[in-house]
Length: 475
Image (cartoon, rainbow, N blue to C red; front, side):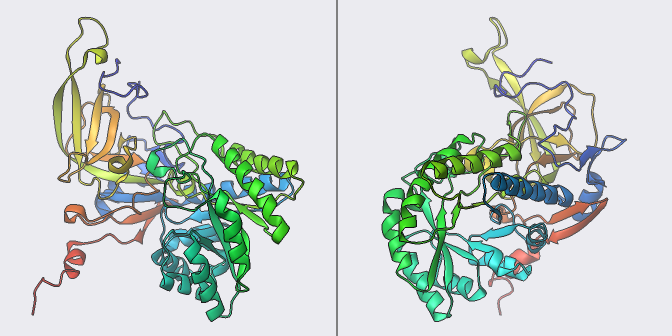
């Protein structure tokens, strides 16, 4: 099968447009004997019939296995260099009380970045001492609540937060453990909006300003400095950025030891996952070993102990465990004129066909393609087909030309209205970024395990939307 000239270079026409590629789909995703896609033994058609579409589906066993694997890999890597490790699940990727409990039960700490996320973690019964609280603009009320609840670590993001946290801790008679977020200047190889350690952005403080901030922290009896914190970005495949960040942070860390203890170092997260066949993901054991060894080398060169290490993976735990089910609505073939460089051979056609497949969701349930031009994969979920692969673009139903769910994929050419379509690797930053644009209701989230499905986040109804509008049935 010849690839469509409109396809991106990385996307080749497959020999089988029904196949599920390892690493993109959750471990529990498989075709049944009839060809239907099932998640942890629950058929796609059954899920759609019970819960409707769009529908977020999370493979519980897959998510838990990834959490366990990351924790044990990092603990082993830390042990090999003579220290211990902490793994924080980054709640911003996807958080509900059920997932918070999964992570806590599997031995992870939990990172929250707002009062709402803190409320979810506390409602889930997570030990507050296992929580870390992030944010570049934490309100005074949020800080007060975090201190009062006994949050294990608050990440200081600016000078003004030092006094705010110290005042709250003194008021509640506590000594609050804090980290200081540092802008290391290491630019991760990722989308500009996902790179969070450049000099010109809202997070953290410059390396040169760390000593003055640490002096200020240490001047308050109600604060205890755990260590420095860094986050270089998200969806990172090249581990060299973590090694460079470790080198820069350890250099400052060593200087700060002259003024008192600084027991930990948090290098953030951002480990990439596979969304398409083009994404090559290193084994997490290799990534964690590389981070631990980089810190150990930097510490050894300065003759200091290796600090306790912390990381904050979120996407790499929950992202591959999730998928979204849609129902296909309309389909249209669009004739696209080719630029001369897009033609595959002299004398070849000057046009190509792109098949637009519209589904019943879109940017309200997955904003990432519109925000970051993020690529995804897709498969027909309700059946298999022997039809030749056709280049498709999966579009949403919103009144936006940029409302695209999958920018480019090959699906069987006989895809039709009423087919169920599954998009994998949507466990992270899809529900979290969901909205009611065009007054679409946000989908439910169901967890699947051992042939059973249950709702872990209730879907919205139009009555829910109207209940917030005081103009409905005014008195």
